[in-house]
Length: 260
Ligand SMILES: [Zn+2]
Ligand SMILES: [Zn+2]
Image (tube, rainbow, N blue to C red; front, side, top):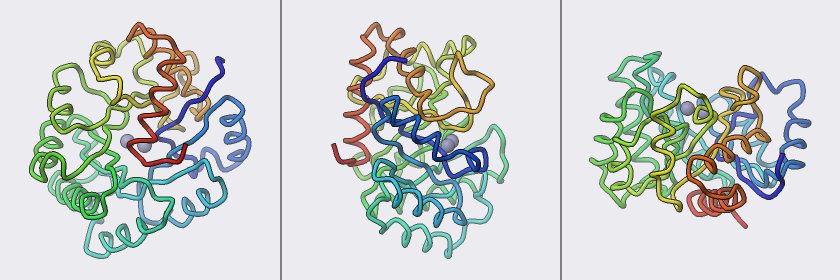
C-alpha cells in the first residue's frame, strides 16, 4: 500500500475479533502509516478496557458513549457514567451515539432520549459527537438543530447518506466520515456525495472489525485498510491520494483535538 500518514477516525479494537492478535493488528497499522486511531465506544461495560488501551498506546484515543442499539438501558446512572468517564484526558469524543432505525435493536423512543442526552453531554463538556445515523437522518438533524448550530460539533461516522443530506450537515458544520462502504460498487449514492463534501470536513475510518473495504471485502477489517477508503475518495474526488491522506489527518486532528 502507499505510504504516508493517515488517521483511522473510527475503530473498535477492543472487540472480540481482535482478542487473539490485537497487538499485531495495531503494529501493522503503525507500519502502514496509520499515525493515530480513534476507538469509538458503544457501551458502558467496556469503558475500562478502552481506557486501558488508550493508556497503553499514545496514538490511540477513545470516545465514550452509548450506541443506539443499546439505548434501552439509558438512565440517569448511564448519563453519570459517561460524564465521569469523559473526564479522562484521552477521551476525545462522545459516542458513538445516534439513531439506527434500520435495525431498531432498541425502540425509537429510547433511541431518541438516549441520543438527546448525549448531545447535551457533548455540548456541556465541549467534546465532538461521534454520530451513528442509519435510516434516521431527519430525526438526527432535528435533535442536533434543536441544540443549535455552533453549540455542538461532531462527525457523521460511517456515512451512508447521499448528496441530498449534505446541506443540513453543512449547516450544522459537522464532519463526514467515509468507511469501506464507499468502496462497494452498490454504494452509488454515497459515492455521489463523496466529491461534494468540503475538503476540510472529510474523514476516513474503518469501523473495524466490520465493513472491510474492497479489495478486502468479507474479511475482518483493521485500521491499516483505511488506505483503501482514502484511495477510493481520491478517485471519486479527482485528488491525489497523498492530498486526501494529509487533509483527513488535519481534519481529524482539528475535530478531535489530537496532538500533531
Ligand atoms: Zn456506527
Ligand atoms: Zn462503530
